[in-house]
Amino acid sequence: MEVDAVITSFNQKSMVSEAVDSLNKRSIKPKRIIIVDDGSTDQESLSALNSIEDDTNLKIPVKIIYHKNAGIKNTDA
Image (cartoon, rainbow, N blue to C red; front, side, top):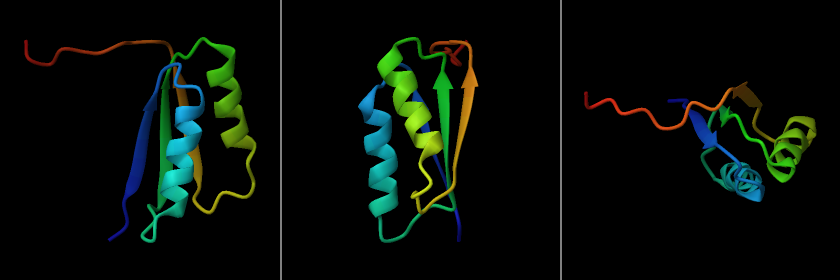
């Protein structure tokens, strides 16, 4: 069975890169990695995301979805 891995991000800096590296080191790898960026604003985070997009050595395809910050939604209403 193949699965995708989803990483959520908002101003996570190097933590996003660490998560991608961790997934790439797993013995059973996901089919692809999807990073959903919730409107990061700090330059270090944006730079980390750009580095991931530009990395041609990744063993797993990565898709980054950017959107405006939406924050946490309460679904208990």
